[in-house]
Image (tube, rainbow, N blue to C red; front, top):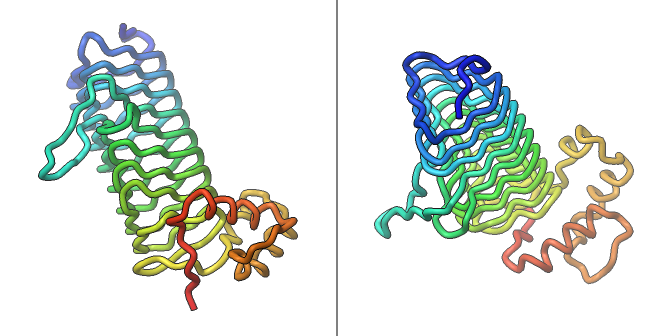
Length: 254
């Protein structure tokens, strides 16, 4: 299922016979693609990368060199687990920089990465993770197994997030922050363990959120946990997240 006339594949690449590849893809030297794998159109896969087990990839992604996708989730002394029908599902228009690792699921049926993400060198997407759209993971940022990272979230340089936690949409996790609780949407968190420092003002304004709504949320954020209803959509979403996630981070950095 590989049309070599419509794809640029280096002679040293190894691609197993059951792999399905679309058109206009570039596959560099020493790449290994082996398993139940489907690749869309216009993807670039850099040298020395390994794709294995069950993977479905969309279009227009860039995988830089020495990337590992589909390997078993790291379970430690419990023993690594392979789910026969488990799938790594990757959307479109993502950038995956050097030495990234993306693991197959070990408890759920999918490890999911959405669209338009940017994943910097040595970042790690573990088993059962669910990554939304327009997510950025900075260099050496790590999330534990089963984490959910929602749309437009930013995980800063060297940050660590405990397994099975959720990072809300538009959240900003500061460099080297250590997260042991769910992170509310729209907030910036820093520290070890992380604490809320305010609204992710710069990130929200860059994404075209109404400045008046952002400013009101910034002013009233400290009263967010009071039992009241806000007319401000951002504040209401933060409160709703807290209700749904009792383990949600609530402490502010003083």
